[in-house]
Length: 479
Ligand code: UN1
Image (cartoon, rainbow, N blue to C red; front, side):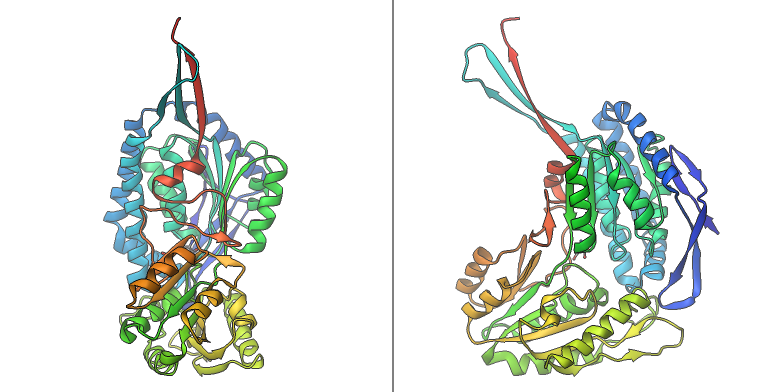
């Protein structure tokens, strides 16, 4: 089947199509997804601009009803959509269904939040003047979403955008158009008016580039790689567009001598390897204090060795395949780099063959890694973790902060003193105490510091910072 783009409320065929392949079984074709041309992106932006004034004036009830309806359908189709997601992206069925549930909840959250859009009323320093501060929609938002969360990330950009009265032109990642198409279909049938939400699938170099450079786009929300994000920022800044970027991570999980070992291993296993390590929140640096280091490495290696790597949708699979050949090549290249740089490969690192042709590899633990090695500095985006030794808590904290990134960090400890100190002194946007770095709630701010993020936070009511603009009104009481 061929899936078309949604432009101005119509399903529009592209000039060519991309084939959506199952990474667990490359013989399994999910469908052909139309690529939008630059001219079609232009049509989508024009449609969004045209729809914006009326959409911005809809009542909060109208927007709430549409978001609620979309959320209800997503939740009702959790199993089917989770299956599609696992089939196109390669995370396990349980993770796929969990992600669909999260997407549904996000729509429900913003269906409520739209009713609570607030302003402020203040007194003036001058007599006889009222001041009112209100939030207005930003306008037309361009969205570029990544392949690792094919439905949750589109949901957490689209739901607030629509809630606050914006129109959207979205380009999903070319590797996973299926979940985004399903979401577009749901929104269309939930009653989103023509032009308010547009789906344009295809290549970043054509569709993404056309979106980013278009002066009719008021804001760009992007999640993806650092180089692409920086390029978008430069281009968008040159024309004064608002930008929100979520990029890489090299998130540390600190394990102190006083940690509950079993908990620390469980938390590190989840953070580093679940979803095949393909999360910007993954714990790819495990910074472990000397006194527990050897025990931790042995327990973690044992647990990693037991992980079942197989078809994402097969019962009993813990870790699905890597998303595609180039990501697999990159992961295996880093395994070689880690070895050459002198880290000790404790477990994993080999290419695996399974019953179907897919991009399988054994999750990797590198011990005796230093924080200077490339495997500890560069985001690999695969199931590869460096275990770094620290002599003291202070050294562990310093190592944790010694990175270009600042998305999330974790600490496993039973010491209130160290947990509290870590919370205050870690240079990240999110911090976890005795919890995995990955796997966040949907109703609270998400985002990082340093090289990980740029612009206002996503999610929760903080999403309003990006999707609205503030107006300060002064009114003379005398008239
Ligand atoms: C999570 O860890 O629950 O691309 C979410 C990413 C992040 C989302 C992570 N933007 O991995």
